Image 1 (cartoon, rainbow, N blue to C red):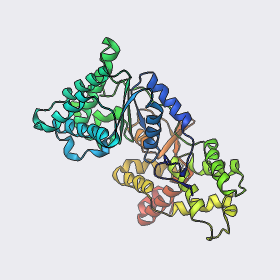
Image 2 (image 1 turned 120 degrees about the vertical axis):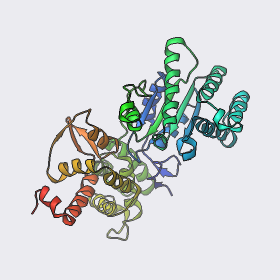
Image 3 (image 1 turned 90 degrees about the vertical axis):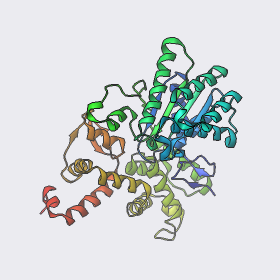
Image 4 (image 1 turned 45 degrees about the horizontal axis):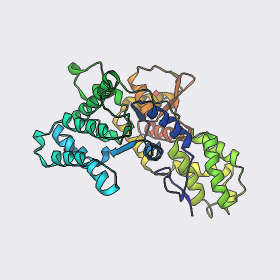
Length: 388
């Protein structure tokens, strides 16, 4: 039986999923145009699933090298040599365990990097081997890098981005072999990494990723997207639901945040029959959506845990959200405001009519309960919020 999937948004066919084909088509257009960019979205927004779907869409036309920085341990970032060796092992794994066709000369070079003393291995050696690989290939080569947040606190990663940037510039100016496209996926906005790592007196105006084009593909699920998934579900279950109505109810609560859409639907499918609802026909109603949201708000999950962790680590963000929710402050969009950038990047907020608003109703309710509890524990906060 197919189920809703909240972890991957679904690559396996046994899971119900929103149709990603239009998004993938838009992203592929960026790749076809030779762009370098980052899919920069909050936690559990379907970035990895989108990359996998993109890889499938590209594989017949391009050589696609897909790597995840999650596979590199902390020691792999200590020196450039250890970083090159870690990247080399990831690529060799693509050949050995996933059957990726890699030229013999490239395999030999990567093995040589791994066998040498790390202090003798340099970053530019790795990129020169990439260039040789690209020059040997009769197809353009695409580099997909997932989980870049695992690398963003490390200077060697910035150096790696800098080499990719230099390759892009040389491709544009001199026709030197380089990747057709490089796609990064992560929460962190890579364009601001240099200020995050370097000390104040070492800030540089130019980011190592300043050649990246803006990524403007909408990754929220619209009511129509959700309706397509529910129509697939309805074919199998024949609940008699009003598909457009239920899709709109889910969209109203979630504003299309992929994890929340999937989790609400999963709770309705798996958790409510026999718990106040006699059958799936009773569940798939607006009342069922309300109950699923109520249960979701009371649970602990990885998304809520990540959000609350950010509030603990960044008290200035907590203050801004508290002002929006508890005091009803309207915050005009200021693109260069660092705290606003963080709220948008981590998924707490979105822009609406050029103002900052909480990302969706579920976050509003969860955060409101959090702030009320915080105010009860600290009378000073209660007074600041307008209470007694």
